[in-house]
Image (cartoon, rainbow, N blue to C red; front, side):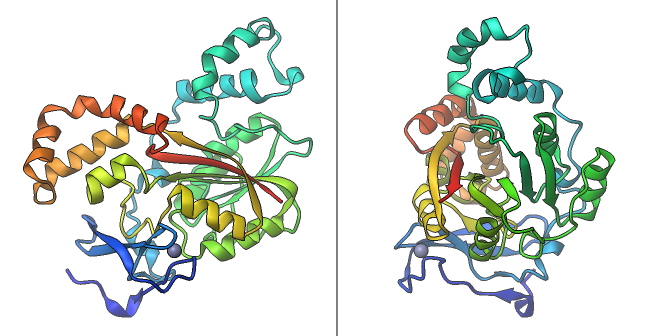
Amino acid sequence: MKADITRMETVGCLCGSSGAASRSVAAHDEASGESFTYLVCSACSLERLSPRPTLGHIGSYYPANYVPHVGHAPKGRADRLKRLVYEVVWAPRDEVRPELRPWRPLLRVLFWPIRRRSVLAFEPPDVRRVFEFGAARATDLLAFKAAGWQADGCEPSEQACALALAQGIHLQNATAETAVLASAAYTCILFNNVFEHIHDPVSVLRTCHRALQPGGVLMLIVPNHGSWAGRLFGAAWPGYDAPRHTWGWTPKSLRQQLAAAGFAIEYVHHQATGAWLWSSVLSMRHSPGQAGHVKRWLARNAAWAGIPFSVMAAWAGHGDFLRLVARKA
Ligand SMILES: [Zn+2]
């Protein structure tokens, strides 16, 4: 099937470079049967989907059963572990359960490698008011609420908004570009696997800067297109989810755009994700045309090697995901 060109648009790089792309990645969308191209900017390394569906048309590329919008039952054990990480590493002492307090120094050492695996992985401010873009079923906002935050957000899927409301979180049924945020109202703004989906990151970052109080935290979790897995597996790596992922962020391009928007970076953490690697490998197995003989052999015989590979990549600063915390300068 060929893409309808009246609903498509071409885009330039956010850095303003007019130079030719250093390389491109062809990605196929199984659901629509359409093919797309990511162009890699030779100046700033940001990857962009171009041509891409317009903002008014992108919604039709999200299937009714898109996992973040409907999803599975909440992951009770994982959520409890993240809460424990928050109490042990980040929470003020009076928020820590009394029975945990004597064990806190020891637990801090044990949890050090996973201390940033939480949406609450930063020094909590006195005023706790958070806004999450693309909040889906509000799983993250519930974690904030449990830590005493007033929680707001937006979400383009009506179905996800209804699921969030059933859990007591009212979301604006809006895209990131059309959501309404009061000025200097928030002390944290969160994008959890959302920033790579939005059409106009520059204007959305401007909104964030205006809506945050001075010193307020911006937290972004995005697939890392500078990761070893992304470079090795190409379009089979799940970061290339065309046309839903409209931008492919790298540490360099993310730092550059945040600095231009008036944010100071506190940390960029590389995260390993074994499951993503598995998925890349399996997707190559299902689309053998994309992979050479060596990769196909690896997919059949050495998929188990994915997890240590992913951990090594994160240690080396080329992990599958980036977790970034910045503050309004
Ligand atoms: Zn660029």
